[in-house]
Length: 110
Length: 113
Image (cartoon, rainbow over all chains, first blue to last red; front, side, top):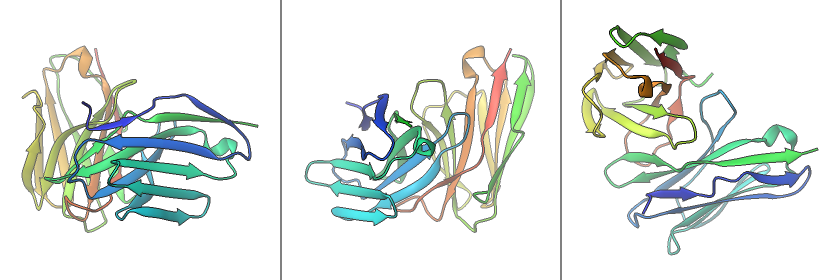
């Protein structure tokens, strides 16, 4: 079982819609969770982090964490073509390693 | 600009060459990381340094040799690489190894010929 799993996509949504990106992780001891955005040919850019169960909102982005289900998600409201990128879920597992999923490619169509 | 700078941005090297990648962070962080990103594969953690001490070597071949002289600088020394080592090599730093977000440099695109 992979430590961090994401649907590789591509996920295609129309402009203005809500994009929903999902991630599951295997280590129940994990305590911190991150979403990165990576444009083609660029390095990953941190967009959200969440430590506690529930929702965390930052502008058009909402991170959701459910530790009982070992599930973390990212919602992007009012999606824009500039949001088209690969979104990486990362989990800080016990021992201090930051482990990444394979990423979900998001395409926002005008 | 994330405060993490990598040089060079692009590198082409032969299989018999020796080269080094450099990473410098200006964030006052204590932990630094090397990741490898190959096409269509997840980021692979290679090495972790915390307060200059190596805390993780993720079964990386010895042709990759890291060096961390202080908390602000990290090197990756390369020798006798293989074509399959061609990838984007990313450096990152964080305040600590647990619970804190990591910031990435721009990466070095390495091609082994």
